[in-house]
Image 1 (spheres, one colour):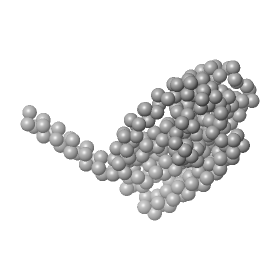
Image 2 (cartoon, one colour):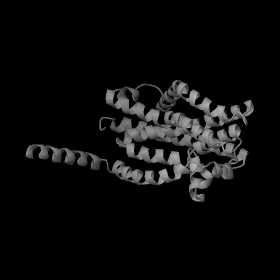
Image 3 (cartoon, helix red, strand yellow):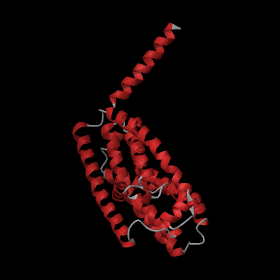
Length: 270
């Protein structure tokens, strides 16, 4: 009995030391836990048809939710697939070959994201089709084309952000809690499940400026469901183009810095 108690104590102490070793991950994990409880209170607002009508001009909360859930498939591919790819390469030992081959690491990341997106399209189409079915009273071919174009542009911007996250994985090792915090923000501050118009102005502006999926989903719902947009239509498209360019430059800088670090220090320290 006493021996088992000592084993239990040592197991707890060992895991505690491991957890504290990655202080940034630990701090963000605690913060994410607190914010998640607050987010669940807001989540219930998405099912209020009367609130949706006053806010967005539609009572079709079914399609509103389905499009948000379906968008998570593209978001997951764009943001996390490259980070997961590098984790796998670290475990398999392939990472050294990746950083010594004569090709662009930025191009390598983006090409792998696109390849993963092609495969995950099979998971997106059925769910998206259900949402489209419930918008048949407002659906047009032009609207469908424009909505998908807006989605594609926002996902392209998210892919640039995903390249930055991939670089973050190789520099700071354990960053899962940071990713959880970002994931919370992506769900609660982009209109994915809660109309962005319901949030305080400061959070609404943050969601529009910092997260490309906010306007991507806003335009998708506008063109398919006839909802009111957050901004004037031309402005939304211009903001999305600016996000793509800005995040693209940031991604190239992050990957270039990672390449210099890998060349000078190597990746054995991971």
